[in-house]
Amino acid sequence: MRLSQLLKAKLHHVRVTYSNPEYVGSIELGRDLMDAVGLRDGELVHVWAVDHTARIETYAFAGPDGACGLNGGAARFFQTGDRLIIAAFDLSDEPIVPRIVLCDEGNRIVRDMTPFSVTGA
Image (cartoon, rainbow, N blue to C red):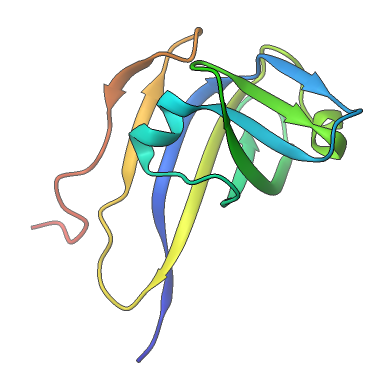
C-alpha cells in the first residue's frame, strides 16, 4: 500500500480576528468553520497568508463562530485583518474529496467550493 498526502479541508480567505503572542501556540477557529470542512480539535493545519509570504504549521482548536485567532509564536506571523488559507491533509491510498469553503470579511461562509470530482470525470 502506498499512501499519499491529500488535501482534505480548506478554509479560503479567512480573516484573522486577533493575535495573542502570550498564549500557547495554536490557531483558534470558529466551530462553524471547523465543522464545515471537517477539522477536529488538535488537528495539524497549514496556515498560509494570502497577502504576504508567511506560512506556518500549527494545531487548530474550536472557538466562537467566526473566530480566527493566532496564538503564541504563530501570532508573530499574522496581524488582525490578514487573509489566510487554512488547509489540512490526510494520508490515504484512495481518492479524497476535499471540503473547501470560501469566507467573507466576517468569516461567514459564502460559497461551498468542494469539487464534484477529484479525478476530472
